[in-house]
Image 1 (cartoon, rainbow, N blue to C red):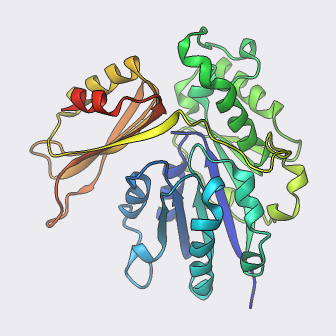
Image 2: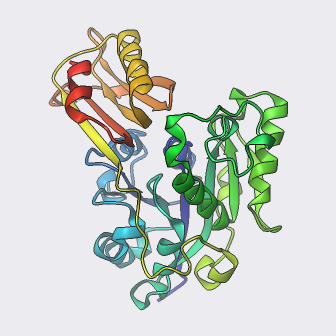
Length: 344
């Protein structure tokens, strides 16, 4: 059968930088044949499309043979229905794959996925090389997941948007507890004092052997992220979870995604103005999508976390491709019809 395929699970909350990290690994693969599983929260495959557009093609010339999008729900809930058959398909091609990257949804618990590598259908062919947890330093700095807000500089005052945080805080802690490596990303968006405060908060949730590194744009050397040989499925007891004593777990049913396919163009600044207004009106955690900009041959990528946005052009529109604006919103108690009216 040969050696097991090493699998790196990349977890982290919404907008922390997971897709950017995987895209960088694909672009700097050092000759490794990498397969990717992307677990999206929502029906539109924004993250999967971003990875496919990085232009790193496998030997067979078809990137779709290496990038799989799982969109039927968080992997921690659909691990048997969707993850298992996809992994079995990959294991059938094990001679053409050097490693596998799995990007979990920002709302997924890592531990149920790690447990799946104990199943006999997977165990003989693959092992969890490491769990890498990506932390949005700027988000944590405003108190989004602080167990003790007093240690975080610049935390926000209590308001109606905080009623969901008990659930999200547990999810954040579970993602840290499963980690072999933690990447504190977006450190350029905070000052030195705030960065130290976030590092202190994060390390408080970790066991002593877990490494923590800082990043601004998450363009890290592959050698830092691959080759841990952790076999995480064999030491689950060292990765405590808030849900260890539960037979099953539930996501906050009020957290949902809303997706929009719009046959119109937007000037980037005008669209950002509308999106920022929406984040003030609704409890929106994440916005991401592709935008058709008038008189521009390239597709614009828009990504937002809370009220913070960035944008870049990722590729040319293809000749036979329908130019549309596609946006995904992830948040709590979203009024899809009202949001659509404010977009059109």
